[in-house]
Image 1 (cartoon, helix red, strand yellow):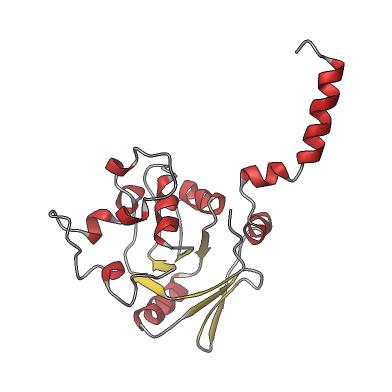
Image 2 (tube, rainbow, N blue to C red):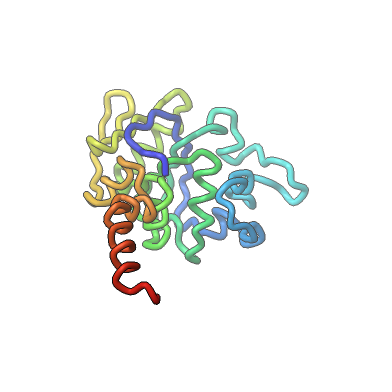
Length: 199
């Protein structure tokens, strides 16, 4: 998993609450177990019309936000079913950070396991950051070590669990955490093989 330290990027404003995982990545695109290739169908029903043409009024189809790496959105983001394809599709599109007032628990946990930083801030802060994102010239600076969001001269601090912060800063998913103990695991397996060779 890629380390998350500092992200300087454009933020796309999506002022909508209760965006569920089926809206993030519709069910017909869940046939794959590959993490790549899902970005083209991120927010599929919002991005494209029935003929598959881009909708000009959707934020990620606008030139200023087509390559945005940050999403500022409404409360309860990622609600609905527990599909891990939702963070996969966000990351494959290029979204590395989602800022919202609140997240659905399973989606929130899945973000950390896939290298996406979900940031919870107050509704007042979301409103300010939404306005900042609507200014297409603004660049956001997300500093995980300092736990801060900076836009121009304005800074907002955010809280994050220390263990999750450690994992993101060091690029550690569940497998990476396990492999930190690889030598101890190998030692155990060798001793066990000698002690109980019949297993």
